[in-house]
Structures are given as C-alpha cells and as structure tokens.
Amino acid sequence: MTARIRRVGRFAAATGLFGVLVPLIVVASTLAPIRHFSIAAEPVAAEPVVAEPVWQTPLSEAGQSDVCLHGEHLYLTVHAPISQPLRAGFSYSDTIVGQCFERRTGQLLWELPLPGTFAGKVLESWHDATSLAPVANDDCVVFHNLNGCLACCDLSGRQRWRRTWQAPDPDIKNCRMFLHGELLIVALPSERIAVPGNEKHPDLPFYQLHGIDLRTGEERWISPVLLTHATQYALDRWKEQPVLVASMIDLSHWKFGQGRRGYLISLENGEPIRSFELPPAIPHQKNQLCRGKFVVTVSAGPRTEFQLVDPENGQVTDRFSMERPDRYFAWSDESNGYREAPFAAKFRQPTLRNKGFPTPSTVHVVGDHIYFWRYDTSAIGCLDVANRQWVLIEAPIQALAGRTVWDSKSFQFTKGIANAAGQVVNMRVGTPRGIQSGGFGHTNPPWPTRLGQQLFWQAGAGMLFEIDTDKPFSPASIRWHSLDAKLQTGQSWTFGAPAVDATHIYIRSQRALVCLRRT
Image 1 (cartoon, rainbow, N blue to C red):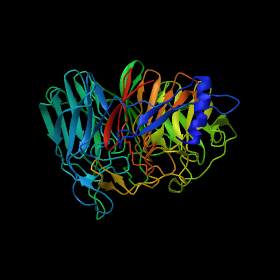
Image 2 (spheres, rainbow, N blue to C red):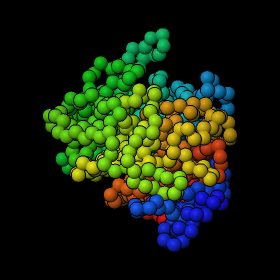
Image 3 (cartoon, rainbow, N blue to C red):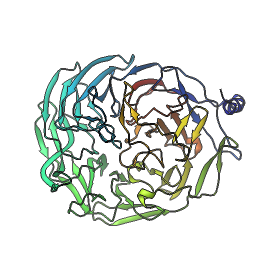
Image 4 (tube, rainbow, N blue to C red):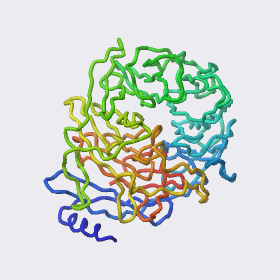
C-alpha cells in the first residue's frame, strides 16, 4: 500500500468516513477505490476499505451494451468470437450474441446468436453492433444487433420473433429501446435516404421510430418524424403524459437539409404532439426536458451555455451561460483532498476548436439540475436551474495503482483495446473522440443509470461516478469507482452503464461482468 493511502487511512480512522474498493475487471483479485469527500476549510479524504466482489464472470467476447437488470436476470450483448486480424486498426464483426446471467451468482444461463447484415468496426468510438442495451419485462427480453437484427425471446431464451434488415454504413447509431406496456419502441433505418451515396460512402438513410407489438413483432405504428443515425432521443413526461423527446440537427460531417427541429412524440401512435424550431445547437446533444422545456446545448466559445425552449411555441424562455462557475473545487495532490479555488481552464480541445463546452453528449437532466462534463478542465459540472448556480468539481479520468490521473498528460493509454482473449480489437484509443481530454467519449458515453436519488454515470477508462442528486452539488455528493487500481496499463474499458438495485451494482467491461455490494 502506498504512503499516500496510509496517510488517508489515518484520517479516516479518526473521522469514521469510509469508501469501498471495486475489483479490477481484468484480474479477479485486483481492487480499486470508491472515495468519499466532504467540504471543509481543509482538504478532506477518506480511507479506501477493501470489499471482495460478490462474483465475477469473464465474458466470452468484447462488447459494450449497458447491463439490463430485470427480476433475477441480467442481460447484455457481446460479439460472436472475433478471430480476424486488424484492418486499419480495427476488428470487424456482423454477428453479436444476447446473453442472460443469473443475478445472484453471475452464471451464464443461455445465449441467443444475432447474425447481422453488415460487418462494422468493433468498439469504434463508443459505438458498435453491441451498443444498444437489451430491454426486458416479466414475460420477455429483446436484443438488438445494430448491424441488422432485432429479436424477442421468452425468459428461457426461446425465440418468439426476429426481424432483419440491411444495415447501413456508417455503423454509428445512438439510439435506445423502450418498453411501454406491450409495445417496443426503437429507431430503425428508414426507406428515405438522408445523404445520397458517392465514391466515399454509400447511401445514408434517415431513421424513424417504430412501435412494435411485443407479442408478434409487427408494427403498430411508424412515426413520420425523420431522425438521424445520431439522434439521442429520450423518454420523458410533458404535461403529465409520456413522450419521446427527439430532434433533427445537422452534424458537422453530415448535412440532412431538414433544418433544426425539436419534437415531442406520442407513444400511442408515433405522431408528433409538438414540433418546434430549435436555435443553433451542438450536434450529438442528448434530447431532454427540464421543467417541461427542451434543453438546447449551445455553442458559445469557451463558455458553457444552455437554453430552454418552450415546445408550445419554440420560444427560448431562459438562457444559462457561464465561463467561470460560482464555485469550483479543485483536487490538491499535495494535501490529498479537495479545496475550493478560483477557476481556470487547464487545457483546450483542438479537435473541437475550443468550442462547445460542455460536450453535449455528456449533458444529463435530473429534476432542476443539469449535469455535464467540461472538457477544458476535466470537471463534472452542475447547473441548478432553480437558483441559477453553477458548480464545477475537478474529476479524475483514470485511477491506477498509486496514482490518480486528472488530465491527458498523465493518462495511461493502452496499445489498443483488448477483448476477452487478450486480442487487440481496436487501436483507436488515444484520440479526442475517445477520452484524451476528458473521462467521457466525444459522441456516445452511456446514459447514466438512476436509482432513487443516486446517479451512476459511467466514463470510458474504467471510471464510474456516483452522484447524490438530492444533495447540493459538492465534493460531498460525489464518489467514484475505479476499475484499474493495480494494473498500470489501464486495460479496463467500461463502455456500458451498470445496472443497480438496492444492494448491488452490476457492472461490465469489455472483458467481464462483476457484482459489487453497495455501501
């Protein structure tokens, strides 16, 4: 144990504060800390206390879906075994496998092959055929291969129905599935072409939301609203009714000719309840409501700016903008704790041309709070819409044995991302589209998992942040789990969000599935 941890231990013994060590996914007996902090005039830290995993199950192959928990079962997706050599830095795969595990033991109960129609890149910039989380209820589970296959089976793994389509290229698809009674809601490629093909790329279709009968696999409705492959739609409530929140926004590299529009879409028939113009918004934003208003992430140079748009008329009802937060908490290695300090940006993101802070795919709304990751500081931020207060807390992007990494200069890149067998399947690691200047990916970090007031927010390099949304945002409301405590090469790549219940966290990397006790 390092001298630094021994110092922390003496402090914790006096204060009674405790953390939990989380096991390294790659090696069964290797552990890493969850840390607790509280605000004080002097820096405060807490003792890491070792806790063995309840169980740990190696995965058969690489994958990155969220973990879906329902009843006594856990569901996720992985690739079929990958054996081909790298091509231009990537492995390619068209077939994935839906898997079911026993919640209490981690035993693999059954699996369902899902052959696709297009071989796409594996673990490409937080996207691949396994990215979409399964959904389940008391009667069935649905798996989605984003490269061309959707299948429903009962809880014993017996298939009920399956549908396939010709998956398009590029294979970058930011969508989710939802269950609404006996209805499966999912975005699928449209027959309408968004960007005609040329010598550089084939036809790129629009996407449309489908309402599919869980019992038969047949459509009840297809929404007329055209979306893009990058639309990150959400399920929310507006005026006491459930709605799908979506938008049409051009990407920097794809122009769709549809203007900028926001949508509230009915779950009953797929029709737009409200359609409204949007102000200029950063591409890849997550579509969400705050106080019944559509949240727009705005390009404003080095500032963080959000606007609230009224779905009734498209009017901007409020603007929130800051370059320096009202409060900033910086980590001090010298004193091993947080201190409130004057804010100053630490670095710039060249690929984003110093614009677009925060990266919009990290924006998440919980009640009156908007959480985000700010790239120029490696910080998690929070806007309290009710009192218009901004708080930033410096956050690590990686934690390895004996050291915590706070920016890209010290980040330990791997020589590619390895699958369960140790084969490198992706060489695109140390780039801004990965996590070079922030803990979260540029375009598709997972949506957080929320249970009660706790928000579990997964970053890419083995970091899981837990935020108590019921507390004022401060170091006292955050703790983090690291999956790379002992291994110095940083090989725990954790792309999917965990599942959480009252007593346990179920978390996966590209290599393994682990059950941890909550504290």
